[in-house]
Length: 81
Image (cartoon, rainbow, N blue to C red):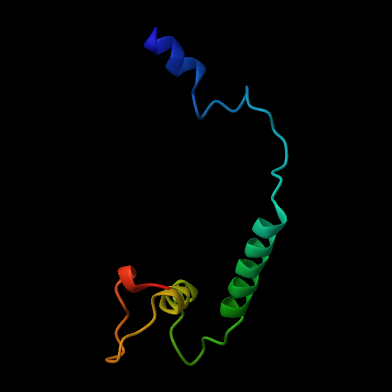
């Protein structure tokens, strides 16, 4: 019986799934669009004089929410805003 259930609930069998476009709430769309703007900003930078770091925006966002202490080190996640 377990084998029958796993065959019926196969996550990778897309032939049985409905294919409809995703619908997002307005707040989710605004977050998505803000992420797109951050992506465009960072990937539009001129990297001829310094190395390219694809994750730099992630680090900036992390720094914003975690903040830095008096010594300039990132606060632990417990002290995040």
